[in-house]
Image (cartoon, rainbow, N blue to C red):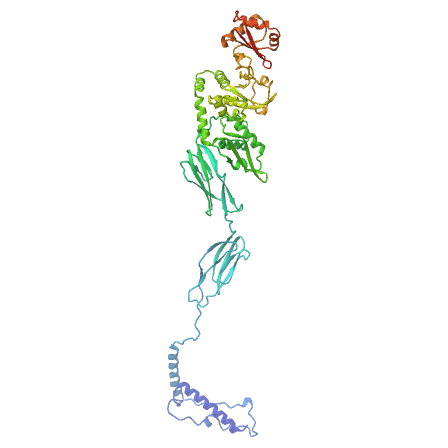
Length: 606
């Protein structure tokens, strides 16, 4: 490279620099501001000593020429001041940034802070980032326990399993909100409800339960509300306890929490259908179940109800059919006034379990009520007589004689002869009819009694026990009926089987259930003992005393003998004449009757 070339390059560099300075200062080409021309550039840039090597090579780096630009101090100062003023004006102007500043999310809100749902159900949650003009409103959803609750990125929550979890929604800059989620097991709804028994018949003042049977068995809410269609007839409480208020009919309605309903009819009966509260066999029952069965059967019979579906009686597998049969017989023995009830009933079973009893009746409820009123009306005269008689023993004797006089023993029509009302109307009866009428009148007069069934030598038999002055005795009016046992007598007392103890009565019979019988060990109310008509020896004093006392009481001689005396009198007839001679020395004809079992002798004379 030659010197000229180097100089030219230097010149061009200075020229470019000048042009730049002029452009920045805005002087219109007058670099120094005084209108003078540029100095000689060549002279300024290069001195005479600054020559290039003759060989045309480039100068070494340390030989690069220094460029010295002449400077007029005054001009330079003026230019600098101008430039400072312009720069100050430019700095006062606002410079707009072409990139906008982002707006951060400050919080996030949710439409629900807590949610409860069932397993398998879902709910859509909504969340909003605030402020509304935030630059980034994106949200992220998450669950604290995805085994219980899941959530997608749209806020859709699904219950997976029973439990609790927290759903969190978060903005891109970390702002959060929480939703508490509780997942519950889906409840099992009630499909149907049935009330049992299918109907209720009870007496005024009594209670019974309307028992709900709800399906399915695993229903979660089995609560039931009850309503009576007529609270003046029957009331019902929140537990289904039905209380009979007054005679009439009403309906009990049960409603489940989800609206399922069931109803049963209730009939309230007048208590006058039950003749007596004296129930001996009921008192022998030991368990509440047995007493409940008795009560249900008794109430059904009193109201002529055929079908018995009471759950405490027949809906339990532990209710033995033999137990029901036994209690059925007990009710009839305690209530001789239930003459409208047939002896047999039918049982309905499902899978070996009794589900229903069906009773049979020989008259309708209305006919029964009329018949009972008729019977009680016909007995009013004897009840008045009893009321005027002092002492339970004497009242029992009045009833005993009344029964014997009213009935004629007749087994032609057994169904009627065993029925209290039919036998009473016809005047014909067998042992069952005798015993029932005797026991019924005793109960009507306030004397406790019970019917006993058993066997005698030629078949079944029925008689009565009664409590007289606190002591039990046996009575058998059938065997003291003059037309049965002593038909060859004139007018005997026929009191051989009045008020006997166990050891005497069981000489002639056995009882079906002796373990249920009360003990009878006393002879205080026996006619012969009570009136001192017992002949223990054959002395003249004893013979005379017994003969006179007996004749004064009955108009003939009647006595209870010791075994040796009994045998001696029957073997030697002179004792008969001797006894009659104490009361009728002009007698020309005598007859007598005797009982080998009881050792009684009655002598009649003319």
